[in-house]
Length: 184
Image (cartoon, rainbow, N blue to C red; front, side, top):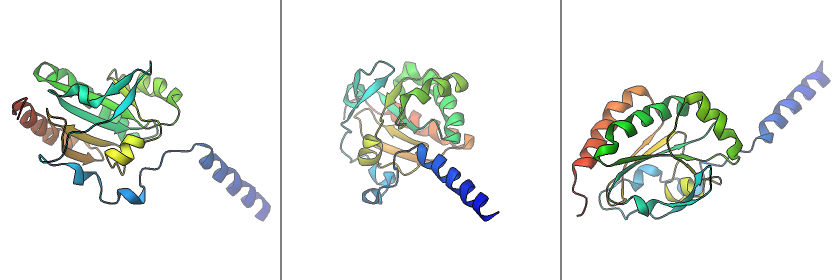
């Protein structure tokens, strides 16, 4: 019986190790993403690739709009609930100046199409395949993480995790940011 358990444990561990996921808890990020949120913070500056074509997307190009960045991964169960709701927010507030992006941290983009087909999401997807932006710029510690940027590109709100009851709070924050003038 002991050799069987050893083989079973080895198989289980090798299966877990086969799918390498990016680290989202680097020690250098111990201060957390909440430390980013402030009306006094500097505007974000980063460029990632758009999915599926790979064209560069600079977040600075969205200045003048309120931006909701949803940091997600295909292996994240709460992301399956969050992304369709963010798509609804995008449709509702698009005419008022909200842009919503799904910032994916998967190493392998081949996992994205089946996920999007299952969730029926058509949001613009940005690729952060090595979690460079998510870890070093946004200081993400878990999936999903929602980041709201004001019209100047500054991080104003950060929310870790997702539950449907959070949407009312997110809507209030979005409306507050949309009501602010485009230039300060």
